[in-house]
Amino acid sequence: MVLNQGRWKGRQIVPREWIQISTRRHTEQTFSIWSFDGIYGYGYQWWHGNFNGEYGDFTAITGVGYGGQRLFIIPDKKLVVTIFAGNYGNGIWRMSEQVLAEIVAAAP
Image (cartoon, rainbow, N blue to C red; front, side, top):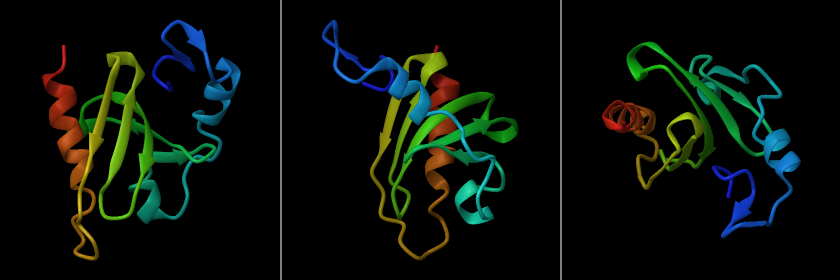
């Protein structure tokens, strides 16, 4: 739904304007653990990531769960990536972004 601007099977289910507003970066970054050292800013329940350098060069709309669970939407690549993880309390929950970088690099 988000990747398709609120459309599903040719019907507008969620208003396009709401998708655009809710997934836009409204704050540049929050405290460092959640902003992933400045990559992420925050929208309305969505994190807006500007990746570059070791992660590639792309923008992702992201749903974040504790333990590394992620829903990444990369509009420029027309790509949605879901990562199920269980990295609770071990400090490697950021591995999801590394996995995403490998997937984006392999995408056409």
